[in-house]
Image (cartoon, rainbow, N blue to C red; front, side):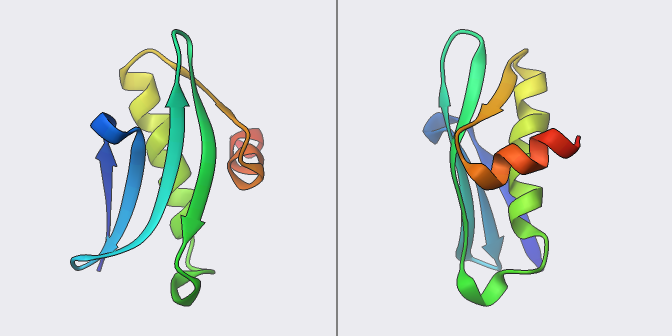
Length: 83
């Protein structure tokens, strides 16, 4: 079972398969924005929508902290544009 966890202290959201880290979405924080700079999923887990869940989790958590989300990461940018 894939588990998504938010790690505010390290500015990232992580995906786990049991205890194995299989993906992450990293952002840089400033006064107004969380800028997603990197999204990655282990090759053997690609195509399952995990990267999208990682980006969506950052967006959800950003709203809790009253931050807007932008993206330098091309994948995250595409996800944000579709929302």
